[in-house]
Image 1 (cartoon, rainbow, N blue to C red):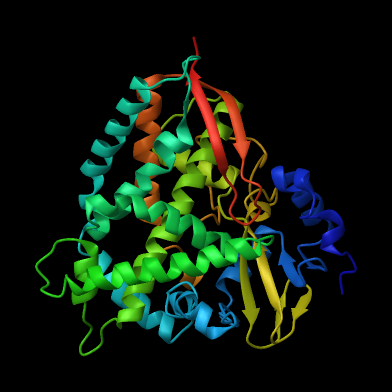
Image 2 (spheres, one colour; image 1 turned 60 degrees about the vertical axis):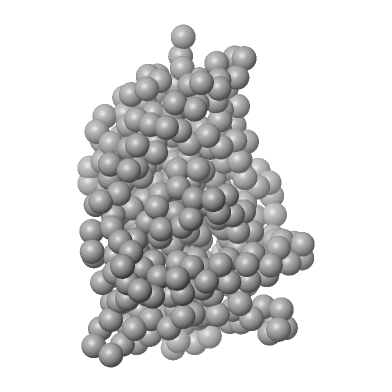
Length: 395
C-alpha cells in the first residue's frame, strides 16, 4: 500500500496550485502513480499508464448518483443518467451506436466550410473593434462564440435563440467542479430544466424527418426497432453543447497561451492542436467508480470506491513524452489523453479538432505574431481555462 496522501502534494484548496497545478502534479506523479487523496476522498491516478487504465478498465464505470431532493434535481438527474457520458454497457453501447449512426451522415465534414466562414466573421469583428492598445480578448471574441455557433449549426438551432446556449452550458458545467456553491447548484437546476424543455420542443418540431441537421437525424435514427427515447435524445443534445463547447473553448485558450509563451513557430495546424490540448489540458479530472475490486498500478480500488484520472498529470508524464513541460508544435508521436480513451473517448473529438485547427490557423494568418497583454484564469481545477486572454499583434 502506498502511504503518500495526495492531498499533501496536491492541495486543491490552494489558489496557487489551482492556477498552476503542474509542479504539484509532477511531484505527486514522481511519488506514486496512484495515491489516496484525503481531501477528495478518492484515489487519483497520475501516470499516463495508470490514467489510461482508469479510462479503459471496464470494471471502472461511470456511476451516476442522482442528487436529492428528486423534485428539484429531476431534470438534471436524467440529463446525466440518460447521456452517453454517464452510462455503461449495455446502455452505453446502444446509445453510442445510435448517436454515432446519426453523426456518420457527414455532419462534421459538411461543417468545414461553414466553420471557416464563421471564424472569418468573428476575426473581422476582432479587427474592427480593437482596444486602445491594439488588443482583443481571444476568449470572448473568438474561442467562446465559435463553438456555440458551430453546435447551433450542427443541431439546426434557431438563430434568434442561440444566445441562450452559452449561459445554460456555463451554469450546468459548474456542477462538475469541486468547490461549487449552493447558488451555482441552484443555477444548474434552473438551466437544466430550461435547456431540456427547449430541446424537447425543438425535437418535436423535427419529427417530419425532412431536416438536414443532426437533431433531425437524432430524432429519426433507428437500429431495427430501437431508437432514442425523448430523454436520451435531449440528453445527447445537451451533452454535445456542454462537453464539446467546454473542450473547444478551454483547449483553444490554454493552447494558444502555451504556444505564445513558448515562442515556437506554430507549424501545421493538425499537430499544433494535438500539442495545444496535451500541454495544458482542458479537462483535468475524470472520475470512475469500481464495480468490483480492481487493481490499478499497485493499488486495489475496492468495489464502490472512486478513482479519478488526472489527465493533466498523464499528459506531462516524462515516461511517455520527451521534455513534457515544453510546448512542441510538431510533437510526434503525441499519445495524449485529452479526449479520453476507451469506450468514453469523446464522440465530439473530430468536431473539436476541426474547430481548433481552423480557428487557430485563421487567427495566426490574420494577425501574425501575437503577444499576451492580459490573462485571467478561471478559479477552477476540473475544467481548466481562461476567463480572459487579451492578445495583440507584435509590433
